[in-house]
Length: 111
Image (cartoon, rainbow, N blue to C red):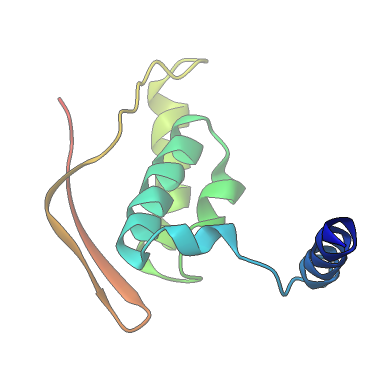
């Protein structure tokens, strides 16, 4: 009896997980954390010269989306081949605010 119940629960869980109805693992993070993580990944892509990837983390035709080309030009002119920059986890000097579908993050550069 226990075996049938366990097997039934396993089958139901499998059926719910396959079409995407199962638990979403991104739900563990709040919107503020996801916004801060996106900022970190944006800067990682810039430093690694993955400029198209950096654009992926931005609003299309937004300020930071359009800055990617400027960063690409700046890094190519000033790096003489390899970029010698390090990136650390951004320091947020104020809590990130999420209002609707907009996030405002207050970051400070490490020098």
